[in-house]
Image 1 (cartoon, rainbow, N blue to C red):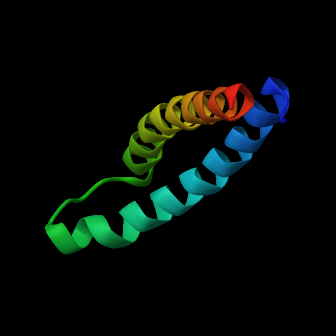
Image 2: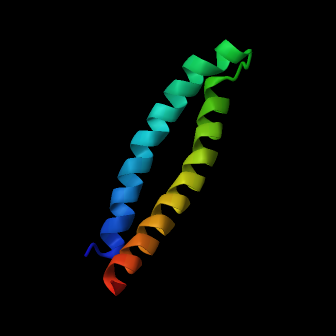
Image 3: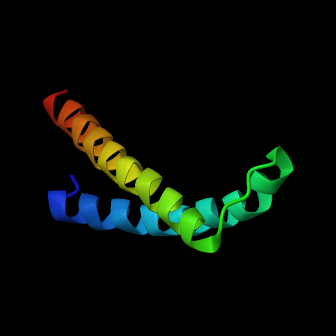
Amino acid sequence: MQSRWMSLVESLTNIAVGYGLAVLTQILVFPLFGLLASLGENLVIGAVFTVISLIRSFALRRIFNRLSVSN
């Protein structure tokens, strides 16, 4: 069983990589849809979704960990 701390560390690592990929994807894809955002705006947009993703990832990991322990 993974500790809560290691779950958080894994989630943070996953989210950090995801953040970089998200910002890069936004920079490449937004213009294809006529959306123009500065680098700063892309970083903020990525940060908002990153925080949401971190919370989601951590919560789901804890839920599934709890389910696997009770079985």
